[in-house]
Length: 134
Image (cartoon, rainbow, N blue to C red; front, side, top):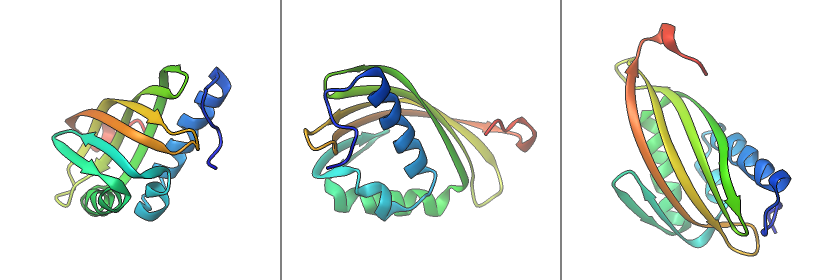
């Protein structure tokens, strides 16, 4: 089991969002992938990702190109086994250009607390290093 489990309360939804933020900030694809069901379904921007193995591969590629990654998530809404978050993260590409990426995610959880669906919409904004917030 992966606490907190659905159905979510305000307290448990906040804890779930914080746990996700903490895990993603490790930039460890193996660790992060363990929060998802074996058959989890994702839409990430224009990518459709199916299952934990594809999630891990996707994250390996993602973080190989996003240096100095730092993420902040915020609970937007929740219900029984679903949570919506807004997020922003900052990162630097291989050319040392900084970006701030903004977006929203909708999450659905299995009864064991693992995420079975994740739908993410994300926009990137070039920023100067002096404008970093995270």
